[in-house]
Amino acid sequence: MKVFLAFLALAALAAGAPVEQQIDQHQMRAEPVTAAFALENLGDAFAAWQRVHGRSYSSAREASRRREVFAANAAYVASQNAKNGGSLVLELNQFADLTFEEFASTHLGYNPELRKEQRASNGGQFMYADVSEAGLPQAVDWREEGAVTSVKNQQMCGSCWAFSATGAVEGINAIRTGTLVSLSEQQLVDCDTEQDAGCGGGLMDFAFEYIKKNGGIDSEDDYGYWGYGLVCQRKKEADRHVVTIDGYEDVPPNDLPALKKALAHQPLAVAICATSSMQFYRSGVIGEADCCQDLNHGVLAVGYDDTAPEPHLVIKNSWGGGWGESGYFKLATTAKDKRGTCGVLTTASYPLKSTATNPEVPSFCGWFGWTECPVRSTCECNLDLFGLLCLSWGCAAN
Image (cartoon, rainbow, N blue to C red):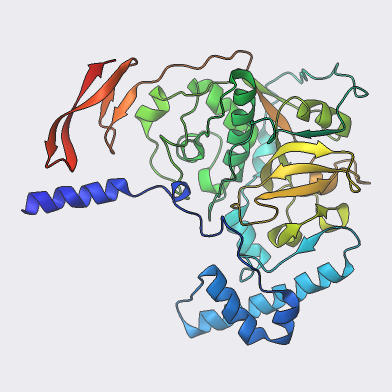
């Protein structure tokens, strides 16, 4: 009986889904508590906000501290909404009990210090240089072309760089193969450690270098996201290359036409400087007045619209589908600073993939993947425990 219970415990542990496979409590937008209500009725508003977002605290002292932060954020949101002359709207969302410093330490992750050490490994080439600017479409949206996966959530991990990189690879792979495959940020967090630092931050270009050097990257389904760094799964890193790339190129910096030339052909990994306006963003176009230029966040540009009243880029974020415009935000393309709104023109890049082929991958058997079956064979359970847990796996030819 003890052995039986032990196996059941192992099965329950192994069956626990990674964070990103579970239902994101913020994936569906809850009705927000308004800043105006919070300023007039702080106690009631904070209690209502806690109920909406399922927030509780370990002590009365911590609850009091969070209430103070909530009040300060309510004042900020109200003042910004009152003075914004454009379409930008902020809200007291799931991050309303965090200071910006707390928020930035866990929900950003682009590391500009690494960029200072980055070597120009692609020779400065830009494959879209000869594309006619006059011939560019007035609007592009790669979501409509089936080249963008659903919005993901990096949780409290500074892994934005990994989500930006996988999003760009997912995009070019879908464009080349016609199949959209969600790729593993967790593999980058766990295994891409020679230059990047997991939840401690990284660069999208370094992630592209890793994927090319590794011979590819695993799928989200096979190597799911947990929201923190784990030991690299070396067998999956070595054998489960569901998508490959040929390399990457950087978009010439501070050049909006160049960025649009590239974006008209594929989604782009871009870095921005996120501020409190991003933390509390609900809808509309973020303009230069609501930005900074010190890059701190990696995101994915999936389109642009020059026909809108406020011309803008369409950006996919990695804070869940309940944030912003269903996980997306808009960034103004008009800016006085040559680096663009929030520095978006500073360091854009994209992966290269010239063919529609990807490797065939072996099968891993069971929850733990201790048995591996070669390509064109499938896992077969040779011995199970009352139909609940396979104790011995084998391989059968297809």
